[in-house]
Length: 117
Image 1 (cartoon, rainbow, N blue to C red):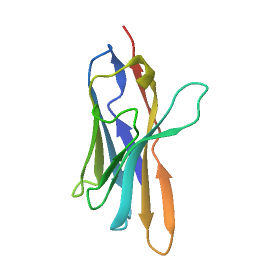
Image 2 (cartoon, helix red, strand yellow):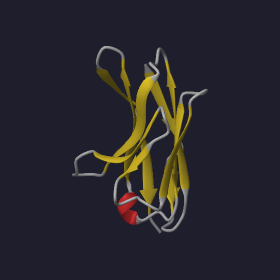
Image 3 (cartoon, rainbow, N blue to C red):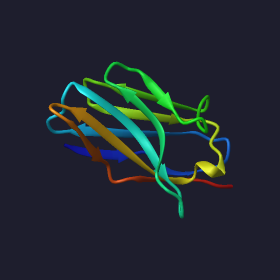
């Protein structure tokens, strides 16, 4: 399984960005796709996840501002980020977990999001 993320960049506070992550390879139907982020000097943290049944989960810090969605036909997950704040600055990583006889994790290469005036 390979994950290819795109859509990061530089945006002013209050602005918006949309991240995309396309998964390829053999992907099992029971899966969770999501986004994590890591700011300099900090641990990687969960941003949002969405199951193959479209159940979404968000970190408290992004609730009401970020929306995760997925296109199962394209094996692609999206993260719409609105009302961005400087503290959202981080490298964003997409993740896929899928289940066959066990859960396996896969990570994308990361995309930089910088929120600054």
